[in-house]
Length: 131
Image (cartoon, rainbow, N blue to C red):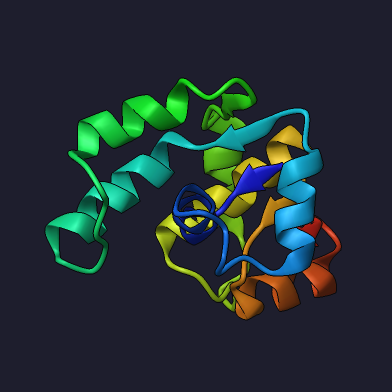
């Protein structure tokens, strides 16, 4: 599975804001993929005052990456190109496009509360979503 940015933040904060299905899927997952873009987005949101962490950003990232089931999902050239070719009605910002394309590229479901992305995925059938 690939976690959307908010799913990672909520999971690391104890999981209370995750849906039951999302929390259960994360608990069962053998591997939890994260994108480097997620860490960029968290750093940006933190700088803008929209996200608070319980410790220094670099320490937080280090602690996340040390967890045994975490694997980094590379942004491949194919996924980047596909993200750029997504329909103009794709509902997300560039990071959403790249995460969506990464989920498709690694053939893993995405954990996300973003209803717009889930609706798009349901119509396209390209990426499975869990929430």
